[in-house]
Image (cartoon, rainbow, N blue to C red):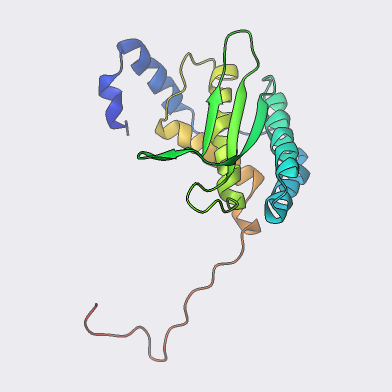
Length: 185
C-alpha cells in the first residue's frame, strides 16, 4: 500500500519510497544488550527523572546504531512537546552537513505537561532512530514515512519491549448468560 503523497513525489523520490517500503524489519544482532537501558528508561520516566531519561535514551540509540553499523546520533530529551494547530511534535530527527545526526524527543505532553507513557516515549525514540537508520544503514537519500518504515519501527519496539512485558489488559467480565441482548445505545 502506498500513501497518498506518493503520487506527488518525483520519479527519483518514488524510487526511494519503494526501496524504503520493501524493508519491513530491522533484526537486532543483540537486542538483549539494550534491555537494561530500556528498563532504566521506563524507571526514569516513572520517576519523572529527565536526566535519567536522557541518559537511557542516548544509550539505547547508541547501542542500536552501533550494532547496526551506524554512528550514534546525539539524543536530546526536551521538556514539553511543541504544539500548534496541526498537533503535537513528539520527536524530531535532523542531520546537518558536517555535524552528528540529532534526535530530539519530548517527555511531556503539550496540553497538560504530563510525563509521556513509557511505550509512547520508546516508540517515538525508535521512530526517530529509524530515520537515522534509513540514511546510515539503508543508504537512502530521503527518509519517507512508508508502510515499510512503520513496520521497521514496530519491529524494533517488539524486540526491545515485547508484549509479554506489557501490563496485562483485563477484559470486562460478562454477565451470567453471556452478553446482553437488545438495543444498542
